[in-house]
Length: 308
Image 1: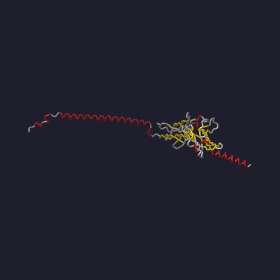
Image 2 (image 1 turned 120 degrees about the horizontal axis):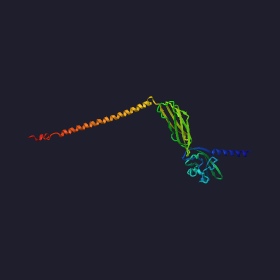
Image 3 (image 1 turned 90 degrees about the vertical axis):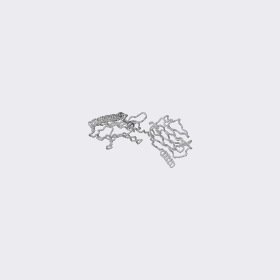
Image 4 (image 1 turned 135 degrees about the vertical axis):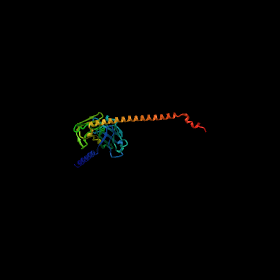
């Protein structure tokens, strides 16, 4: 009975060792970027001719699960899924050091899966020396939200007003928060619409209806949990003072027009004064020239004709 018990114990230890060797990591990537699926074996100075490296989709329900295959130091594309053709690459300068990570180019929404890396070594017999699982989660940043609020031309305190907030080009679906910044309380949206697009991204549109207060401070926040991004837009409008009534606006408008008319009249008067001054200076100069020309010639030469 002892040999059987020892054999069972060794088998159990072998199974536990295999389970422990299976690592799992989560990789985050943005849509359209390149993602590196990590698979690193700590042993060094491996001979590629004795290795087989398989990258595959962990879901056994897939009709085609081969993402990338390396056999005896050469890429093997014979069983590679069409979806991954010309989109995968191993890091050749790192393979012999135990780095079997895979570069996945131009990731799309359909690449959001769990991938499995299996490394086999053939010596006397073929055995699994390393396994790893990588969960690829995709994300895309949302655009800066645009917040639109009511335009209050009069005191509308107590009346129902509507705010709207929109953002787009993000992934996955966002969380949308409306916040009253005067007390940091959360408000329930009146409408929330999330629209998917053909490229896998989403756009979001939300509205909020609240009663107007004398000092409204509203914030719309778009949260992307995967990227840990939180983009917000704010609306602030002070209550209009008593002097800001429609009548005061009319009075200000009239005063402005009166000031404008007074300015024009002042300019006209100034131009008239300049014209009069110019005319007076011109006439004075003309009179002096005339007095010079009217002097008799004999008077100018009287000193020269007198006897010596």
